[in-house]
Amino acid sequence: MSTPKPRTQFALQSRILHWLMAAMVLAMLFIGVTMVASLGDYHLLVAIHRPLGIMILILAAIRFINRMCTKLPPFPATMSRQERFLASSAERLLYALMFALPLVGWGMLSAGHYPIVMFGPVHLPPILPANPMLYAVLRQSHTILAILLFATFLAHLGAVLFHTLIVRDRFLDRMALWPTRSRKPRVKLD
Amino acid sequence: MNSPKSNQTPLTDLPKASLIVRFAAIGVVLAGIAGLFAYAGGWLTPHALTPASMIDTFEKVGGLHPGFRRNHAKGVCISGYFDSNGRGVPLSKAAIFPSRRIPVIGRFALAGGQPFAADAPHTVRSMAILFKLPDGEEWRTGMNNIPVFAVRTAQGFHDQLLASAPDPATGKPDPAKMKVFLASYPETAKAMQLIGNHPVSSGFDNSTYNSLDAFRFINAAGAVTPVRWSMIPVQPFEPISATDPGKAEKNYLFDALIAAIHSRPLQWHLVVTVGQPVDPTNDATIPWPPDRQQIDVGTLTIDHVESEDTSPARDINFDPLVLPDGIAASDDPLLSARSAAYSQSFTRREGEHKEPSAVSTAETEK
Image (tube, rainbow over all chains, first blue to last red):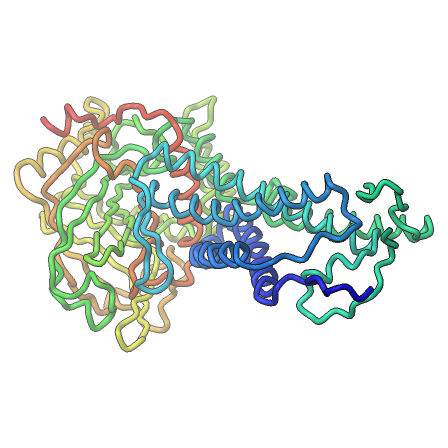
């Protein structure tokens, strides 16, 4: 087939942002869940958790703008309409959570009357007034949203593995950082 | 999962055996990551000591008192200012040390998880202070009127709580349990002797409050100094009275503090003890030698007292690791554990309905 070549991969900056943030978000989830159960490593992990969360918030904003400005590769033909809907919904949810978790964390520290320390003397201003019940609600929300993010990540990973290992439609190539050779799809179209 | 085309293509042409292996591999990857997550979160090790189980133990020993701190539960809030004299600058670049006046808010409290316990002369007294630095940084410190801390580790603290819990049958701690505990924590046996021999003053106002844990001061050149600090009262020392008035007047220590602040501002010198390389920074049960250099870096003045019912200090977590640039944690394992446990206590009480404090506004305005 030599029709005008549609994009087969996400734009390079999109792929870099995807993998960079995947590593950061996954690290963040593990740091978060470890620190709240740890006495000995709590301080060290919290000291990483706060600035890493703000870095994710900044990258999420950059990524969102990039997402609005770049053309996406089409879904492969192996995806049904329902599956495409699910994939798009999961993407929206992941974006929403990448914004919500750092903002809830920042707001929670503000409501809890904490200074929002980044590194050295650098700290952020509070974004909410100090209020006990507001703190408690946001603290609880932070955990619930984090578990939701982890579950969404697992579903996303499961779907990609399903396509890559079972359907074998070279689904992962769309996001690969390495160059991919174009190969005839296994499933014949038309 | 069907192709969007009407003429359906099979999902895969893989042989059945290969398909099973591949599905199993996906299952293993997903379950493995989820399992690691659960392990990291402590869900697979329910008996490990965590911030939550530490606070559970406080609630078990002291009873559940919603809305109150799980330790140092009975307290009163204070505010005032700190005048730096500049002598801390060679040790630390923290914005608190150049000569200036810094507003503070804080809290005096009695150790233990019971917010309505009667004041008693030998209950550990604490002073918690939040220094509001000019650039928005904060320094929070919680200090006690004992010369050393009784335990070296979080596990020791937890086990001590259980060993000294009152026996439901007698209402008193079981001496046999304490004996077993002290046998496995010899550092605590030594520290308890030092604490027992330390003269206790008559009230909150003339107590010396010690950081107990070691910290690190970092100066502008990057030089690191191990330190401990103390708030040493300007009010002269007076020994405790022979009788325990707490039996008749449950809040006598707090009432005396309130009366003292109403009559005149109370003052303490913030004195930094400079550690030497041989001094342990990871063991709060061991005192540093008495000949260590001590530097008076400024004067704390407390001129206002307020009930927890109205003071914002009720909803401040005096986490000892809220530190400005220029002050850092040492390798003392208690510091991270305190930070973690305070956070757990804070999170629980902030979401609970607030009961009036034992030291009420009627009392603080008397």
